[in-house]
Length: 564
Image (cartoon, rainbow, N blue to C red; front, side):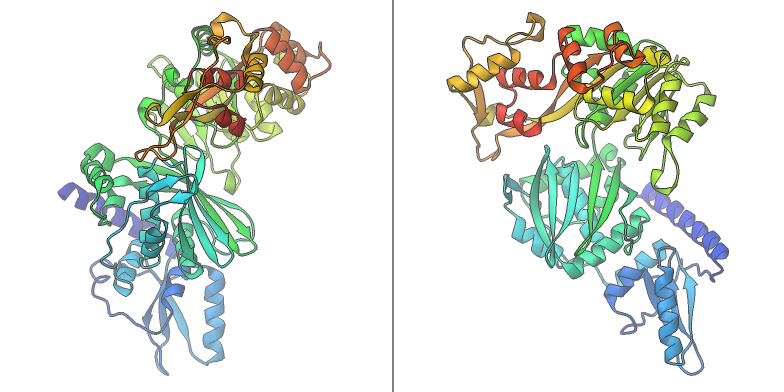
């Protein structure tokens, strides 16, 4: 308890010092509220509670003919609202003045204006593809509590369920809350528009975003898991017992959960997505990539080289970052210097110099790559190649004695290779730069205890044979003369039949034949042309990998078709 109190005191000291420094720059008088924020008189009926949340400000003194109206503001208070208030008081021939307080002081005083209710929260229970068994209960809970508590509760429940995203979406006059679990979205609650406005203000304040922006925004939030658990009394059921045990685990309580916030204006208001980077250290292993022995040997041979470029491609949520971190983890030893550029830093890897790149405020991956090359790294990871400048800078690094790892948005490995050539141009100098392009997706795994075997019809059997029939024995294709598949057989414990996800991955090895596309020796640089040569050289495609996993009973053909 003493350590926790000391940690909170250090945080408050830092918050006050930062606020005082910023207030001086802005020319606003600063007040240190420590020692008085729990006792200062509350000026009620001077400002609506919703506006106090929305504009992050608090009335401190009601004015009269001799005194000004005084408001405490924070670093998140919009200047546009202060101008509006100035005009309103000027119209009434009254004066108004402002004092700057810290976010810590603001939260303490707001807890007195809007005390936490003695709530008993329900754990979210997802029971089918259509949503949650607790939808109405959770919606009712969230409609009664403070906005900061809603945000923490949603983060906590999403982490508990292993969700990768929290989606907040306007549906007419209300806002739907959905969790993405194992790649599938599930509705879990509905919020009133008024409650969501306050929640959005809380999110925006934590992520340093604007609630009035007319364009898409990106921000970051970090939460310590122990701080999230402290606020909630949960309904007594099996899940909450597991919850409580987790909350007592010191390592878990000290874990920092990194989140990326994306907001976008819609016709009804700003929608938001909170992406949770909640994977564990033991996930960062090459063994989770699902490669056969021959592929793993090729993979390890390529990443063992001191130079060259390895790209991982796929859409958002396809596990690209986990694959890159697994490679970094495998290369992480005392003989190498490893540096990563990330937007944002998703996972702390001891031994790796991780540098956040805030692309929403003018920073670029290309400029940072040029900077870090002066630090003489052995391995460089670039969070994402998004533009021509970054692509060319990365290629230059890859041919000058660095192993460069990067992600790229593309449909598959061949499409990424084709698009990258479009970006950097035909250049024989670059033929030795790109060594490997990985295309990947995540598919849901069948739960062995909630699935059943069946024999597919002849049309399906023939399609399977056409997809994987010509593959070599090393690909691990099961007997195609006696094809059996598995499908979900939901149980009370698992209403989906799926549990967890697995990666399907294709490896485009850039050998001498594939390199001819970069040198210009082959004129047709389309994805189909690249795919054909890669297949002739032995590449097993993502579709083929997925069908093989379905034949092994790990997933279903329906899931493979859904993802690919």
